[in-house]
Image 1 (tube, rainbow, N blue to C red):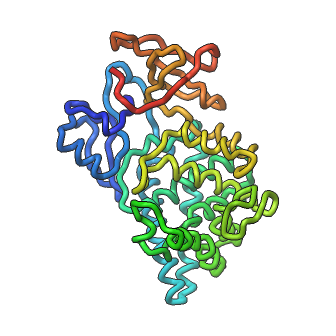
Image 2: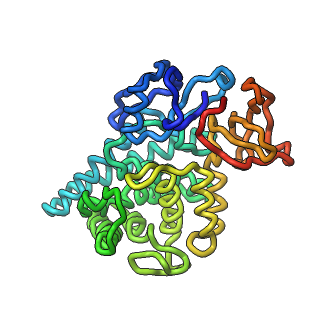
Image 3: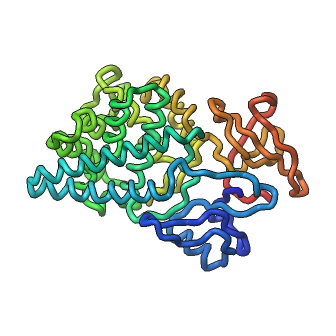
Length: 361
């Protein structure tokens, strides 16, 4: 299978990977041939890409880092927990906070277990599904990236659990931000942006009230927008004053934000998101952590089309661990037929010049 952008889909293409909504219901089943109406529907759902069948790439495997059952359970728990936390603060029912903390700790443990059993680098590009509210999906994605980076940094099991809980809840303060501001498609006014910025303070105040949620997790909500040079918020603290978890969350939060669809822009590809992190490496983000994060993710995910520096087209076949920007690729000849597989970790004279989701003829 290979991945193509929905805006380059043509009728008759066959879906190779089922598309789900956030409740786990299949919207389009694997094996269906696209009609113009189906393609329009996908675009209306803001689905950026899909996986399609292609005889030249039928052996390419695209796996999610999470089992579908685990993903759906996690999103449901996050959605319910955010609602419970918001209402418990309003009604001052502290026991709800305690129950929510226990439930989310179990979710984090299940995510850590799946991550431990998954030997591949992380590619959330493989998870094609629609969602009604990006906050919950974003929270899960950020948690997976944070745990992957924590694993790469050799954090202890207790620290991994605390980091995972903080990552899941890092945006809980956004429950206090009016939805018309949070999901505004146009440019925010100065006052609207300041209102969104309050979610870090609000999240910290909410989470520190729960005895079942570690203070470190509350600091993830507080510090995930702080930057090394002091240009972040809410306090504008610098470098060593930012906790390890705050630095991790700052990196993975930005990466998922730019590689996910938003109401005001389309998603970037992973290599583009990584470029943004590298552009701020040492000034905004910890350089060592950015480098470690590069080892955790599929810079060029399986099934995407790439253009080589000599003009040839190819499709990514599989990943090379710890050389995530040097995958195994399959050449597509000028006549559209399948060429040879090239391991870029061995053929160092060949470079990827561009990555795209357009159809390879």
